[in-house]
Image 1 (tube, rainbow, N blue to C red):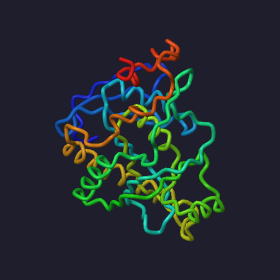
Image 2 (cartoon, helix red, strand yellow):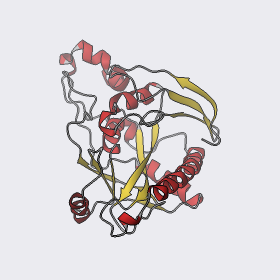
Image 3 (cartoon, rainbow, N blue to C red):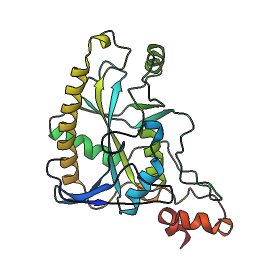
Length: 271
């Protein structure tokens, strides 16, 4: 990534297994950042195989407080065109059986998830994208499908009838786990195509899609650098205290093994 310097690799293991890849730690726009290739370098991990818990836990272990999640998505509305960036503020789950919580094994937590995206971070990204002259739209719903196959036309049209904006395969679980880990989270949904509902869909070639992906990646690099540069030191949102009223279990009854396993996440509430 242009401007990403002093890169060092962190090999991290977690109580939930290994993350998708080693994390790159370096400096961007004068700030310390960590980068993780969600699907592993070379894109070798399918959406349903991702170890979401390990990925978010690894970020937490490095002291990460904000996550900018970049994702290629299909558009479910004419207004979201290829090369547009959408910053959704809602998610709709169409996955099956994916683990999307750190809790269980004797410790129950119910986080508030009515508003799943950090509003402060979302506005920061919007301002950064506007400043880099990337067509950006804040708000809308990201439908998270199971994959790895794309939608049928029938499914795509049903999602459109529900008012969904974009469709992808990864971000819902990340958002839930980031909230449990008290990390600010925002999705930058980079539109590559119109899914399969659009009448001109069959006219799109692989070459067209690759060209869009390439341009989206270049735009994403500029937007992330600009957002990181503008990132305030202090968080004005409630993400950093998401567990304050979410832990339900009597603390005296939490198994010691679970307590140790989740110490990084819940430790301050057991002090």
